[in-house]
Image 1: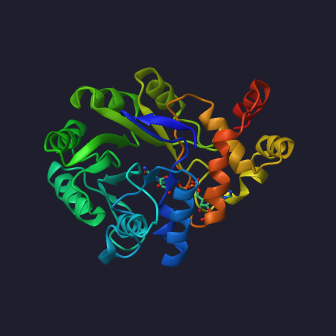
Image 2: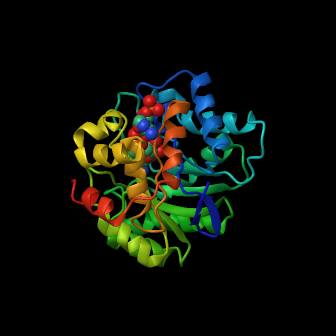
Length: 287
Ligand SMILES: NC(=O)c1ccc[n+]([C@@H]2O[C@H](COP(=O)([O-])OP(=O)(O)OC[C@H]3O[C@@H](n4cnc5c(N)ncnc54)[C@H](OP(=O)(O)O)[C@@H]3O)[C@@H](O)[C@H]2O)c1
């Protein structure tokens, strides 16, 4: 698969989002492992996860553990796979998502993620979401300390606005390698952060790129131009969506979620789908 850069690493230009394999509606483990293995077979080398991708209160890190098991059980070489996890969100088990961006929590969460992933240093550790009760510089200061301690190889942030991206870049002294924000045909307001990342040379990882777990399958019926362009190329509207994002800037690396081999195998083909300027313009206008 064609690659793009995160820090000084090349990763497949389409990543795999792990969330659908661990939250509400998740499949059985066998299907999840088959999905991760299919992604690896297809050249995916970026897998996005989080300690908060779980359902019940007593299974924090369900998705990290699943990914660790899938990598350990894969027949081939996985040394070039970058597992990107996150800390700062919690799920108490009632379906809600809460936040804790305190340095104490982030450091303890990182230690727990290290154990679950079974690695000496986490490939990419992302601060999941700003916590209004904690000054942003304190949360990012924890990432800096984790980098300095060698517990994480790269640092990223998520759900950040342009000021926070610049602030994190300053605090991390040029060691901020990625920003993960929501971006899809229905959700365009992160275009400013995408453009800032392109100027700064930082990877931009669109989350819920297909509109989210419950809406991804209907992308073509909700956004007619995506279905029309898909028909012209004889591909899925989801592939068109991912190719449209890839064309926005060389720093964009979408992380579509998947819980079936078929969907990730379809999504990775977006790296080879060339859209014309006229098609890209129609998709831009289809918000
Ligand atoms: N940082 C954050 O705050 C944040 C928030 C949300 C998500 N994320 C990350 O972003 C990732 C992606 O977001 P998401 O999973 O919420 O939403 P998404 O990627 O927009 O949609 C996921 C759904 O798309 C379906 N799908 C994938 N490829 C497809 C294809 N080619 N054709 C048809 N359907 C396809 C999958 O269906 P099947 O399940 O049937 O395979 C999956 O359930 C997550 O997995 C997670 O890693 C981060």
